[in-house]
Length: 267
Image (cartoon, rainbow, N blue to C red; front, side):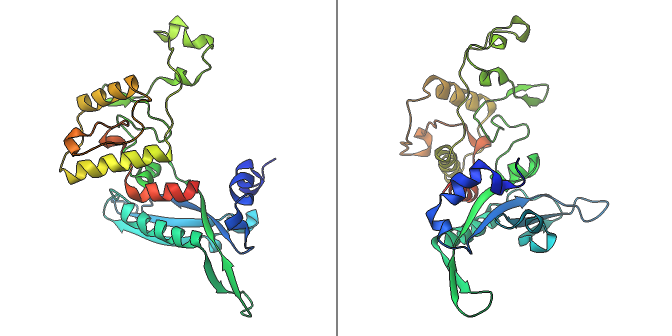
């Protein structure tokens, strides 16, 4: 039975087997979370607290409001379009903490050395998209886990292809009641390398002053990606106009702020 994250296999693999983190009993494992709050009964004014939870405390203490760390508050008359400027600062803090910090012991008699590590992030659907700096709702590539492309219908994106996750010999793959047989393998998952390619593609488009790709252009990119799934493993772009990505286009782009957090999360 899992009473908290400390009892999970992920904790054992990512924390207990991390020599840098386990070097000091004072090291801190953190979870990052954000969500929008409307402080008034009417209007669109929002507050977005950037909060951190200390995971390597006893469960009753870890969830205590008094021990939640408030890293910052983003506020304004409307929902922010991006959190990247703030998340870059957070990424810098985590990078410094990963290299090692020192402070005075609780009793004040000696100096202690410790490190910090970002273990997980939590958010609901809309906040997750904002945290990732990715358009999720109604985007051509709106999934934060894979690269399945949506189908535009009735003024919205529909994400089907769920049968691709079934075993290749599952009867639902060829069941005529679901339409045409599904013989494709599971879709490619988003990885750190994918995140970096998305960020590079977004930066190239931004530097060239290009707007978001049209649906037709993104469809063509997806067709080339599907046809040459394993052909392009590295980017070879001399100019933005010559760049043909092996990943979805602008609407699935993840900019550097979260890419750095993602790297710290994985590393």
